[in-house]
Structure formats: structure tokens, C-alpha cells
Amino acid sequence: MPRIPYATTDDPSLVPEAAELLGKMQPLNIFKVLAHGGPAFGAYTRLATALLYKSKIDPILRELAITRAGILCGASYEVFQHEQISRDVGMSEEKVQAMKVGAEDPIFDETQKIVLRLTDEVFENTKASDETFSAAAAIFSHQELVELIMCIGFYIMTSAVLENFEVEIEPPEVLAKVNMATKGGK
Image (cartoon, rainbow, N blue to C red):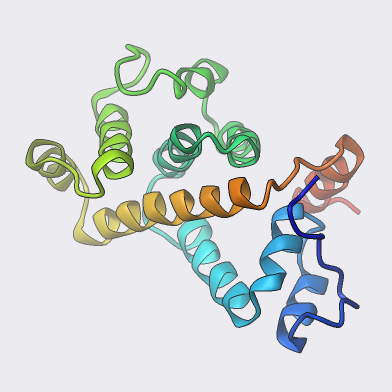
């Protein structure tokens, strides 16, 4: 049970722009909580869209960072959602499971290990070590590096929202409907 009620589009406590945006979103519980954030809800979704769909970061590397951040934060909703997205972008099931171990798992290549170490260090210390940052800077463009750090921070923040409001994973029938809509079905 979430700590606050899930918002609906006719919720009188929502600012009009949040209610309107909620009506356009997939029926996911995260959005039903974030809608209570007023104008920040729209800003949140714009940044999420930029990081997920408009960034230069390789989708598998992006999902390594996002899912690992969720794992480190203990955010089961985040991990559940992004393990599926990881599979959808082509990550093997072995790597999906190995994210729980992190960079020490030998299944990951060097670039993937750097992304995982960077995620761990940003989570643990906010600032990555010089060694890890330099290794990432040697691989990624400045844009990719900034996007990667923003992605890690954004999903640590998202995990904090999910955990503090105890957002629940949607029932299978809702997830099936969302999955079908995402893949172009009806």
C-alpha cells in the first residue's frame, strides 16, 4: 500500500497541468505518485524522456547504470521495471541477473564494468574516484559522460521517490496492457 493515494486525473488536489499529463501517461503507479508533485511532474517526465530516448549513451550501458542504481537503492519497483527494459534493449538474461553482483561479475566487458563501477561510486560517495572517472572519460564523449552521470543521479532520485512512497509494482494485467501499448499494440 503506498504511503499516499495514487492520483487520478479527476483528483481535485492535482494542479491542472499534472492532471492533464497524468491522463496522457501509461497507467503506471510511479506516474500516479509523481503527479502529486505538481509542475515538477512535467519536468520529471521531460528529463526522463531525454535520458531514456534522446541520449547518446548505448541503451545497454544506460540500463546497466539505471538498474544498478535501483539495486543499490533497494528499489524493487525500479529494478523490476528496468530489468524488463534491459531485456527489451537486448541485454542477455545472464547480464540482467549479474547486475546484482556488479562490476566484479566476469560476464561484463571492460566498458560495462566501468559503467557499473561509476554507478556504484556515485551512489556511495556522490563523486567517483579519479581512477574510475578517468576510465569513463577515456571511453565516452563529454555529452555521454554528462548524460551517464545525470542518468545515475536521476535514477537514484527516482528510487528514493519509489521507496519513500512505497510505490507498488502494477498487477500483471496492467503490465501486459502497458507492454502491448509500448510495443504498438492496442
